[in-house]
Amino acid sequence: MNIGKRLLLTLVLLLLAVFSLSSLFKLSGKTEHEGAESLAAIVDPWITQTIPPGGSIFSVLANLELPGTEIGMISYRFGDFIDVTTIQPGDTLRVILNEEGNKIAKMMFVQEPTIRHHFEASGDSLLYTMEALPVQKQLRMINGTLETTLDSALLSMGLSPADKQSVNHGLEGEIDFQRDARKGDRFQVFIEERIFEGKPLPRAKIMYVNYDGVRTGNHELFRYEQEDEKSVMNGLYNKDGKSNNTSGVGYPLSSIHVSSSYGKRLDPFTGRWANHQGVDYRARSGTPVYSVANGTVISARYNGGYGNEVRIKHPSGMITLYAHLLNYSVRTGQTVKRGQIIGRVGSTGRSTGAHLHFGLMTNGRYINPSQLRMVGAERLNQQQMAEFETQKTRIRAMMQAHSRPQQPA
Ligand SMILES: [Zn+2]
Image (cartoon, rainbow, N blue to C red; front, top):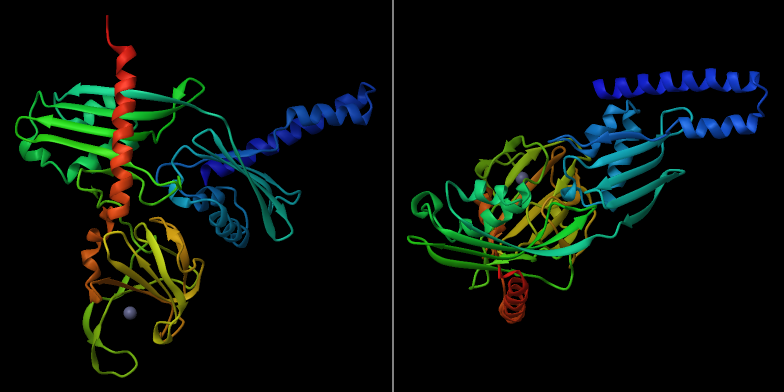
């Protein structure tokens, strides 16, 4: 709020300055046209907001003190074009308001400085275009020896926190670091960085990780990638085609209030004891519902007592269910990412009020959603394993070619 007020104040002061300047121009006998040109040069109509840690599009829009309906509409439409899970602190939102100052006329969202999403208001809708500035790709091999922790070693070698996290998650399931890591253990990370204005951008492609220790033994991870650059399967895998990243699980709502938990309960309709095969989360109608992990939509339909429901199958084989939705925004067969909006909370089907019924299934049976963490693990199937083998060979060749000219004389 403070930032918003300060911005508004700055804007008002600027406008005042501009008005006094424009009257000066008139006095000095300049034509109005020339005056107007100088105005444009002085006033930057864009209001810039930076996403703070833990912030969202919604929170920065709220800083602009726009009417709630406008903020709601814009953040809703925003999600239609931009994968909200890719929004990072430091990304900037720039807007131009209409003359009344109560609606957004133009908006630009700048991500990791090279990606610019442009929005222009046209009646009640937003016209969207994307602009990606060119980046240079560069390969880098990081070699190190463990002094204290792998974390600090990776950061000191210039890996961004997000990339360091990916390496960690990849190795987590392979190695018990608490127990087995020792000073002097050796590690190797091979990455493809994107360079913009001389500096590497966060989220490098991690192609290869190797950890070798006396007690841990040798562990290799390779990047597996599908043709679709945004595929939910892309990432680090061990030699068996297993990804150890079980942290890729989120919650179906941005804030969680359980109104009915899993197991025996009095059925609100019959008044009898029944087994509740999921968890109910209380939420206002229209609240966005997110996919808890990467996966594929196996159904999105109206299904009797469950009303509008979405079922997502995750690579771990588990299925998540989201029921009583007001509406859904995905279709059967579509791949979704963790955190992607799949619909809105509602009260369709056999429901006494707005809430989300969230279910978790494995081997055709409902289980307690407290087992949710298991949903995140990914495993390559036979065909993917074959692709993985080819890609491993290619990565090894890339590393060899890369290390040759760098060999010290
Ligand atoms: Zn329920």
